[in-house]
Image 1 (cartoon, one colour):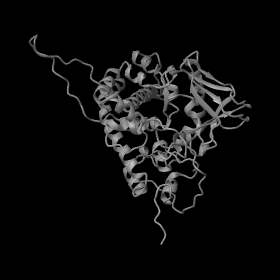
Image 2 (cartoon, one colour):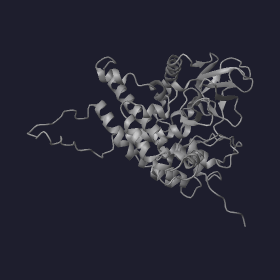
Image 3 (tube, helix red, strand yellow):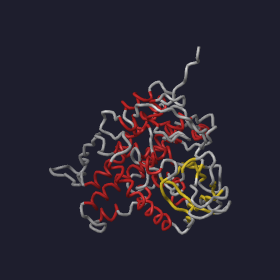
Image 4 (cartoon, helix red, strand yellow):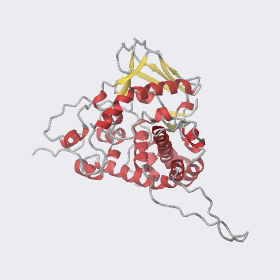
Length: 423
């Protein structure tokens, strides 16, 4: 935890050093800068763990399932809802009519990945998006949350700057679990106006955006080590360059989940009707005697582990380090709807920056032909601080690779496994 302003600054500049505890998680997770790797020639192998083999754990490891297929069929309407929500969220929101959302050329429906495309020719410098801060998921949303804001503020005071990503992930996980509860009730026949709880749940601020995010493996082509089982990590990654990073981040997220459970669980249990709101105050008590404290449970909330894991994947793979205002010296970690739809390329055809008004403006950096996909650059692929195996543990993919990563790792690719010098 940073003790001085200088140390806090150093923490925010760090990108991918192995983390020793959850309090240094922010340093590991701070939004980096994307690169473009050379196209890789891959060899084929008979054993394809991503397709033909699943570990004994109950969690999903195989990408292609009937449930995933159903999810893909509904994805288009989810993105339509996202666009409508975005344009109605603020009068300063702008999305060019020349943009359409459909399966990406980087895998597309085979992996669940969607992207943004030009439906008409776009000229260099043409404005494509305007994204006001109000539409972004920021730390302020978490700290000012009606239900958990005070607890998040307490956590930040205790843990320091390293807790920012933990708090942002906790806020996302809480909102997602409440959204799931709302959709469960709707599926059972409830309506948004049934009672005060349903009216509250129906107004989850980022609901349409949350529905498009990769909360589990395979959604939006997401193949992150946080979604893997321990046995799968050991079987595939042990001995690889990515193993230490994978184990450290998984351990830290597990620890963060225990911390967040005490903050999130009571809110979600209440929404599910599992909490006991009755004030059992029976029996005589002198005026100076305090009310008996209710027993607190350390039991992890059902669904919380998956939600927190998904929230960290989202923060790791999709967050931006963006200026808070015209003062470009001060940045914050945030999620930027619409912009985070764009897939990565080391040769991007868009650029984005902070306008004086505080909005993120996305423009074409080159002339773009109708039908071309729009690409952003997450981090430079030549960045020495972000070799391919770290790109994988951060973003859940390796640039230029279209083969399933589990197969690539099983092939003991040199991206992940150092090779001995020939004698």
